[in-house]
Image (cartoon, helix red, strand yellow):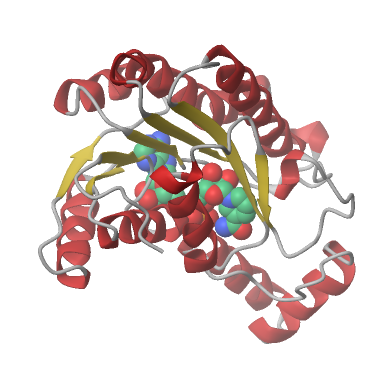
Length: 264
Ligand code: NAD
């Protein structure tokens, strides 16, 4: 299927690795002009080079900016004033007992996971509306619906993204701009891979056993029963970003291996 986004300008937040990089790769393969973002200039430059190596002839740029605060957003939007496709992928996670999460952590999670997307959408939406074409995608999580007890603050931000995404879609009624949320399940990104490896080492068990226990005890409703590959998430996101997906808006689209047991 030709996604018909050749030449479109796309920005993927938090995309030097993990799901974000996989999304940037899919969009670049479809001919979009992609902007990669991360905090460290070195990591951004390396990701840009890596993507250029993977997709011959790809138009790829990079902007180093910490999007958890307004100054970082201003740096990015000054360097990239307009885009046709905005993927709000940036998100942090960290398990912590509820009683141990201070106000500052709640605020940091909200700023990083929710406000980064709000601020970017607020900047880029007017240009999309004027062009009568645009795609905004929030990378949420199955944790938006199944709030994880081991990181309630993370779950809160993922639920909030669904509210922002749905409301923003409604505010674009009658235009060529679509807004959607995509809900991945446990995905073997660099961040999660390192986290699982650390847990396995702490418990003195092989990584495979750690993951088996995670699905047996932590996510028993998973139908897939395995970690998702970032490319499997990116394939859905690329479709949602495409011209072919014009009738999909205001949706919360799941690529979580069936963990969420409601039918719709
Ligand atoms: P990751 O930790 O592997 O990668 C995060 C990326 O964001 C990196 O490129 C990092 O450099 C960048 N980044 C971190 N803080 C930043 C900041 N303040 N400003 C700019 N860039 C920053 O993450 P991932 O696992 O690929 O997750 C990506 C998204 O998918 C997140 O929103 C996450 O909540 C969501 N998600 C992940 C999973 C999973 O299991 N991996 C499951 C569901 C949802």
